[in-house]
Length: 468
Image (cartoon, rainbow, N blue to C red; front, side, top):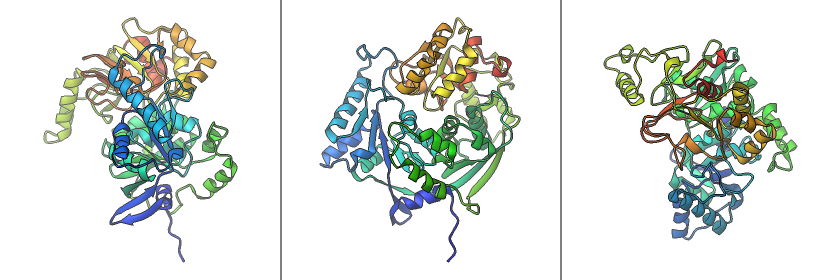
């Protein structure tokens, strides 16, 4: 009997399929992460229907979206945020769910704490009411965001209905030059294939560049798969993956046996049939800067703001570019390096890990933030904060006049008190530059952590390669 070759995604999907109905598959969920924003309605639904949480031991809660990143010994100013955080606390207590609350040493952004605590494991299915759940795919997991109604369904049944996606291999090849980060590479990919290039697919990232990535870098790439329109991103686990997860707080006791199994199965078979395949050559790319209002509107730091006339008159992209430039207050032909900024945000589930902060410290050490720029650094978790402070990074940041904050989502989505004012322009390490994403009327430019640091020092965008 001939055994059919499968992609890594297909293997995980098929292993977790419990039942089928028409074209929908009922998948078993190994880990369910929840936070304060998308869970309240789901818990209300459980109470209304007198249901329990099916597997509270596989449900993990944290506060991240609305939590203040300033002094947490002070009362919360934002009443809505306070209500949501207290509601999650009460719901977790009522249903017996483990919560990493505001004072917990394990609190942090949900997509940061999962891997660093050893809760995220290869070959598992992971869901959360948050689109950037795809971050966990860096560990060879099938991880994706779900809606609030699905959150309730998973809480009640530990399963989810979904249709099978197509598979899409992106082979990242070439030689990665110094100062070209994983963030630059994923922005370049989205720029190349567009925000709908991955629509209906699970992207598997392969190639020599991906193999040489650290786990933090793989997380950055998988995190922004959503911005390419994909359902999720995934990287086959390897020894680097296994080493990262060893001896974490919640790493399973039978870890070595699990590794033997993962090595035997968690990879795409040599003859696996991907529905779509492309190669992306990154040897000659420059640091990337977004100039528009979606993550595909990106240029090299050495380039200029594009002209709408470059697009066909009948092309909808031309109208989108015109609207984006109007919102962003930018003039075609302006060199990217002449764009002045008001704010810098280094943080988010895309770029707030220890490696990101170490890279930033090397750029800003012994220097000062430009006088007119307000810059904040928000670690992705309290553990990252503790590790950074142990290395003395916080002193480097403070001496350079960066604000060193507590962990949380912060200015990524403009919740709580971390947001842009109308017209303010921000160099941001987050993942989305939509209109109003970081505050009503705020103008967001997506960059890597070291590019954000360089802009903070100069008061405008600058090629970070000139500083190193």
